[in-house]
Length: 266
Image (cartoon, rainbow, N blue to C red; front, top):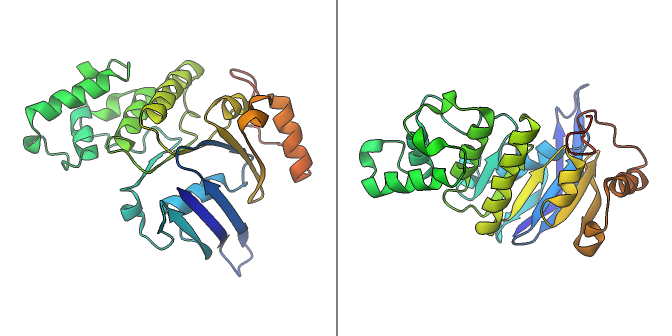
């Protein structure tokens, strides 16, 4: 499904601010994988997503999606096959447009309600109702008036309205309170399962990294230092994962934002 082969990425090369992120990184993602990714700041998690999505281009190496080489493909063209959610609930929607208009955009209608049939408006409302966020009665409200959790749930629906080949979740619950985060994760898991999506999710929650999906990666200094799945992953506790990280990277996971347990200290 997704094949990342020997990629290199350096920012501001040849300057005093030079930052080498990746040296010969490779990753194979199977069709239907739901992979959680965890690591401290500077590990390369978001840069990896930006390279996959086309926000940045690799210096060297190749990226294949469903057998197609997308290494040099522009970001807007990749967006047809790659859905993405960010940590910031303000991204991913048009705040000045209504829920209905935003869904019209996701459906490829350009956001012009005059081009949408009554049956399509009915479908929008029915889909929104399935989120369980009470948004079906606010279809004509600007999205900018919604809460962060409501926007993330709506953004997830928009990103998967036309089933993408790949879904990238970049800490999409990190800015939400625990109860809302749990609700959005519930919607996320349901969406991924029902649509049989291939998904990569960056998370700062260690328990969520082990309990969500079927495979967990840990990154350090631009390298994948832990890659666990199957029965091995099922048996792991958070402490086990931390020990694996320390042994593989030679250092402790020291990011203050990392949550060891749901609702625990950061």
